[in-house]
Length: 143
Image (cartoon, rainbow, N blue to C red; front, side, top):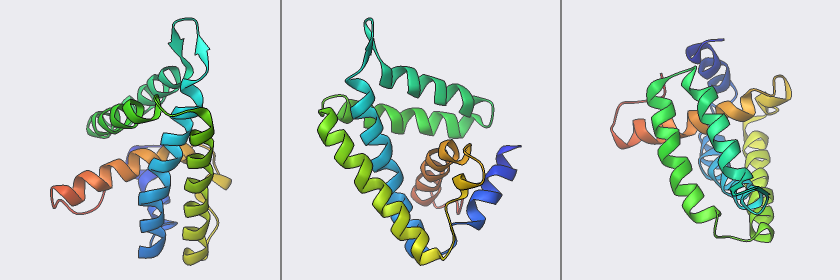
């Protein structure tokens, strides 16, 4: 699927403003939690968080340059914070982030899109990061 198709499908499950707010908070919190947990696991001199983030950015690069760049910036900020947290705080952030997600979908009255296709677990962050950029630059919603 193209970025436009993926974003269109994702957006269809995230129309309620309360759900969108929950995702604005929940998705970065989940990513932060995953980074904190994965940073505590090492593959030689490299922590697992870096491996996961680079792999995710490699996928994003197949979709869109701007989204990849924005995600790289957001991931760098989250990594700078998350890599210094313990796995216990990471686990708490991960759980809290998912609580926001589930509450949001309760408001929406729909199940999370990733239950139909797990690729949407990767689409959520790039979508949110692009929405942040669009809001900050007054461009409107994601393309």
